[in-house]
Image (cartoon, rainbow over the protein chains, first blue to last red):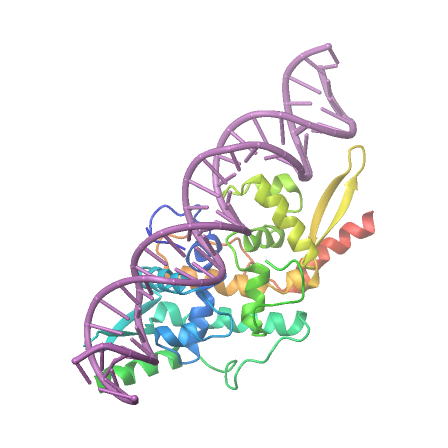
Length: 135
Length: 135
DNA sequence: CCACTAACTTGCAATAAGCAAGTGATAAAA
DNA sequence: TTTTATCACTTGCTTATTGCAAGTTAGTGG
């Protein structure tokens, strides 16, 4: 996870990518956002059961790193929704290939929802735009 | 990292993939093998500077999980070379997209070696086959 | 014999993960 | 009007993982 955008361990683009999303949870959150989830409790309710303190810290880091943005959807009390930025949405091809890899090599894994493989990063941003229009 | 192939935290293929390679180092080793490295000291000399105990444990786990195999290339003392299996080599598209992602979104990152984007998983296995023929 | 190399292993301090419980703001129910 | 409930977190604490340095083992070359 990168918090200070300087001082990467190397200039290798793969290594840098792993400093952003090289852990067990970040891409799970990105996946959930790709599937349309946007609220804290949505992420908590995923079957992997992310611990709540880790969810909070990952959301903070992903936002600091520009992969997502949060936007209040109510005040009293203020509550936030999280949306992918283009930078975050562009991880979709990575997710798609990881899913294909598991389907090819791991028995008994589940199926992604319909349309997952044909989705494009741009499609993920439309949801956010619609939300903005309504706000 | 998966060691016991049962008991995934969920059946989601993305989540399962992350149990195999969801950390900061596994894909660095896979990358090095994609680039033709095969010996312990090769992996150690990469610019990211993987700690040696982590390298040893990752090589063990990646082998247990079937992403690579080791093969002695000398005895007295016995020394091993590590090679990608088809399962490991099939992560190449994931690496390629991660590299593209960083090149698009992170300033000042380096370039992959020539031919990286056009390589295919099968190409990575030929090296291993050549090695076997000579053995 | 001594230095040196490759491939590890071990010890240990620091960091991160994971679990459970608590907090603060508010709305809805009794 | 207390009582309960929800959402989005935070805190405390225990365990696990990282990362650094040093040591080990089985050789090779001089």
